[in-house]
Image (tube, rainbow, N blue to C red; front, top):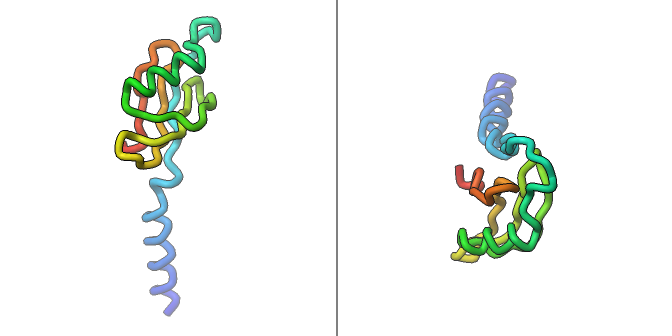
Length: 90
């Protein structure tokens, strides 16, 4: 019985591993070179995302919103170029 419980616990932790994935990191850039929040919102729109919230995480813009299909997304954009760092699907 104990072995079954330990196996079940280990499997549940492995299944939850993607939820503990580390946020990406962007290269440190001077803040005066960063795109404004308005500009990054526009860039996210061009990439197909509707922005709900923007915050800064690990030198990246972290965007919470929806994709073209209306599915909730968390994406990270480079603050200087606006390039997609990761889209939460990776």
